[in-house]
Length: 269
Image 1 (tube, rainbow, N blue to C red):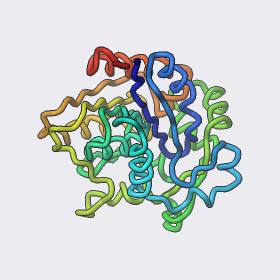
Image 2: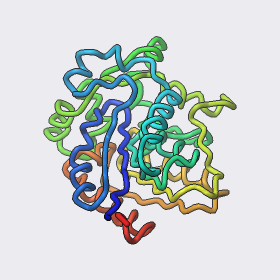
Image 3: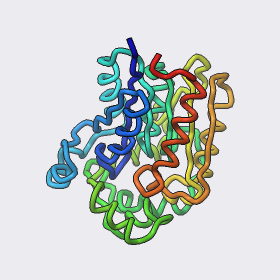
């Protein structure tokens, strides 16, 4: 009997879980059992999320981690986690807690201990930080803000189309938690980076990413220097934060699949 390893995709801020659909289709074709459950409070569709932004507000990092931990507990085996942006941070936390067989963190939000804070990242997150009350609210991006934060490495027309198709309001709380992580000894952005018994981890960065610049991903890699577990990094020099949803998504997905096969040469057995 063929076993199909579960893969759980975790979206980040401002994108709906359905934005993973092309990846889900590809991974299913390759013998995996993929799913992309949303964050707590996420409605089922982009349209519903835009109409009910209050349902998304107020959820912090710990809430999201526990939400996915509960979902994982119902799976037949520990899954492979693939997360983008804040989803990449969530994937790292769950991997560090030994809740996953492996994880891929794509343009992952900075974890506790990562110090670089490039100006482009500050500008990308300014729509949240411009008002302290946004910590308890959900915040939407304008098409222009999305263009800077996500779509700067693609044509303006494609950025506008992605904005219309996939964007939803996002809770401000995770960004405030990440911003204060290095001043809070009990920050929810803390990841167990010293766990040598965990599964393998792949960090993926985009060289033109404004929201999570490559320097942040490389600084994240250094946080794992005391772990003997596999920790790899791959950079796509010409890609921005939209690399999981734009026209070049397949190159990223194929690279992830190749890496997963290298960790487990016979997936599905």
